Length: 127
Image (cartoon, rainbow, N blue to C red):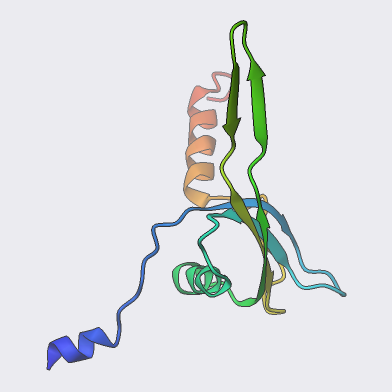
């Protein structure tokens, strides 16, 4: 009985990195959006579920672009060496109108408090 109940509440935790490359706050004309660099095998649905379920972000639309890694050639004294950078996918995520600030330059209270305490204790001019 409990196993059947737990089966309905499974959450897939992906082991796929998402690197934030840029973010833009909402304006009067456009919603907030962010650009991620993801693995080529990630689909639009997986990107939306990843951001919605793990981070609780209100994702409205996801568009993707596939990029081939650049090919390079190194000329040595005896032979040529060819290599290729890894392929990647660029995901542009548009958020719902409820999200206006994407959090660029956000403050972490615990770190800010520690910095303030260190500056107070290290300042010899103040008694």
